[in-house]
Image (cartoon, rainbow, N blue to C red; front, side, top):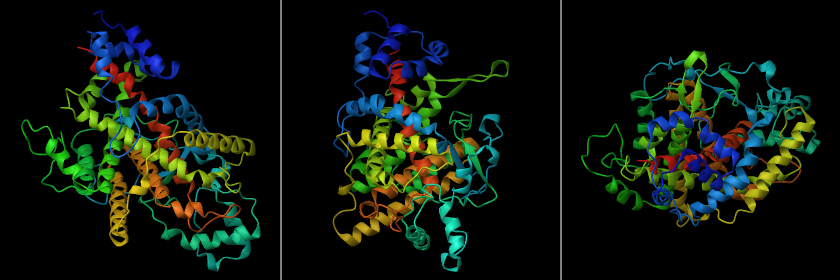
Length: 485
């Protein structure tokens, strides 16, 4: 068998994915990646390694190949454009909240952990005035003029509203806290909350690792995934040594759980995989002459996902990433009617840009509606109503607790993206469990039954298909890893 050359590998990737997009992303660090694996495997080995992730996913009726084609050819190009628009570019976050669970380890001193806040002078006026979704004082004590002014400040909603709509805002505000929030939301009025330009602070490997980072993930898995402490998750570095145990006992236990608890674990595993893949894809390869070079680190990817290195666990992790993708895709499908109403305007203060952004978002929804295989959330929390309600609340509180753990991340940049991605997934869950409220939305006035803040909208798009669809280029690395000697 002839050896695979770098050019042949690049050609294979190009055939599978979006041509220049995937090939360019992989070749960004291609020269350095070759030094880690000088030998190439045969064509037959290449074909076999690509079969590690095929077929139907567990707990849903969608196959890996269909997701690849839909994402790379349909969804990703549109999502990428959307996340570059001003409305989705700026995110307000408080990175100074103390860890609520253990003494603060101190913030990461590595320079790449730093987040550069965006001066408010550079944030579009419409975003600054409309970042909050609550009134600053009880609605019943406000004058009509004050209510009108407050209504204009709601960035996700068109400010040209009728008097009836403005009255509805006041009613909605009184009921806002009763919504099923799945995340511990930052207080955006806090003096410690700052705007961050997400395009200028990309998620990438910063060097933050070790006991501090593992304590965060260990707390998430051990205390919040419905798992008894006597059952160890596979390849957990903080768990006692288990010799040659490959973790099958864990999966025997997991498969014995109800659907809802299996879904919860797979979502968290998918979230973890998503973060790890992006860190492998944007790894600090060289700091020479004061200019950092970032690109794919194949060796790091191998350690986390290669079948041989992880005793088969890597394949499970990657399948959970696909599962997460389907959950998020379903949430966007379900929330489309909310944004399709004329009353909803992605407001930045620039009328032309706002119109173009809304049009692009609606195009994304149309693409998602055309995808035939969505996750069916109706099978969740069915059966006995009392038991289902109790389980749903337990599900919500566990995830909300995970959102609080993100304030324990010592690296500021890691904390930023951890909080954003967790809020994005929490928003997706909120959408999936609000089907009736979304179906009953009034066309020309806000609804007290279901609302999304601008922060939730930004997190939903950036942290769900926006950024995670980018990570489906993991296959270009996966081919290189598992097909080399």
